[in-house]
Amino acid sequence: MAVYKIFPEKSATLYSFYPLINTGLDEIIEVSTFESINSTNEVSRGIIKFPTNQITDVIANKVGNKAFDTYLKLYLANASSIPVNYTLEIYPISGSWEKGTGRLANVPVTSDGAMWSYRDQDSGSVWFTGTTFPSQTTGSFRSGSNSGGGLWFTGSYESTQSFTAISSKDIEVETTFTVNKWYSGSITNNGFIIKHLSTTEFTTQSKFELKYFSENTHTIYPPCLEIRWNDFSYSTGSLSTITSDLVVASIVNNKNEYQQDSVQRFKINVRDKYPARSFQTSSVYLNNKLLPTASYWSIKDLDTDEIVIDYDTTYTKISADSTGNYFDVYMNGLEPERYYKLLFQTTISGSIIVLDNNYYFKVIR
Picture 1 (cartoon, rainbow, N blue to C red):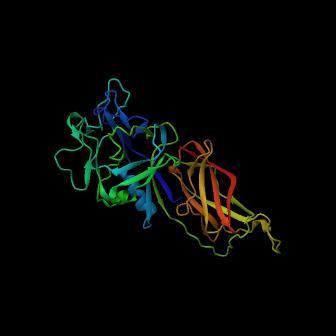
Picture 2: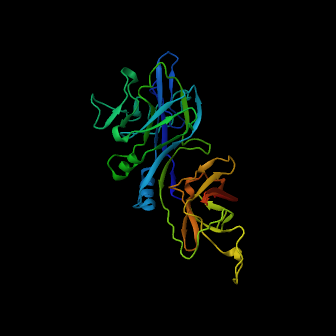
Picture 3: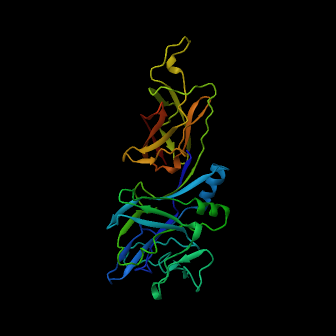
């Protein structure tokens, strides 16, 4: 599989109205604009970080010298009063911060770790000191006791995602530029900050709530950083490419259960559904062929019927060698103790065909 998922090591929400509350253990990351009980315009921003060692390992040892793209993905848990169109901004955070052990609803409040006023309250470290932001960075600092809200890199580091009435409200935004800078050491990986546009925050006309699952969620929707690369290889050897849209494809090495840290290369046998008669010593039904180059794989969660990894014309192409078709799946990107289904899509003689032969497998701990 040329889609590798990395899960967060920490996350939190920064609330301008609650500048001294940590939310490092909340199941939700909130990115909202709201009116407080004091009738003031307030905002919340999400911060999230992924392990540097995992990012480095994937790029160095799995991607290698191939080109790659990365995407930050967060799944919407709840939303209210959202406008028809809106845009979110994602930036790499400048400076370290601590997760903390708090929740928004804690009484008394928990004031360790990151919050609106501090990157780490325990050590007394604020997000920014001074009168001029460091080069290539900026922040949004309100006066008085409410100053804070994060510090982030700007310019080319900016990633944005715009939403419309009919678009999915999940976040899936490209972050390749930033991850390349982390990998090269140009900047330190301190994670991302997720916020509304500056023209939307702290305004009377914009009041809406967006809540996403955090890494503390007990659902199957934790945030992730996807690293995608093209591992496609197509060598036919003596095998011919199938030309009939009446095709049978079967996985010949599905072990049904896979450890969470394993990598499985699935092998696919392909044949004509109604093979032509031939004078040979073995059954014509054993004549293996190849799917065309425009063939892709996908993974679906069996219980929810949701697509976990969708068909992609670059990142999920089915490869081939002299023995048949194949593709690789990194099982660590799938939630353990769940069942999944494999699907294939191919184009033959102008027809798009989806091959669903109920090939299931389970990821175990």
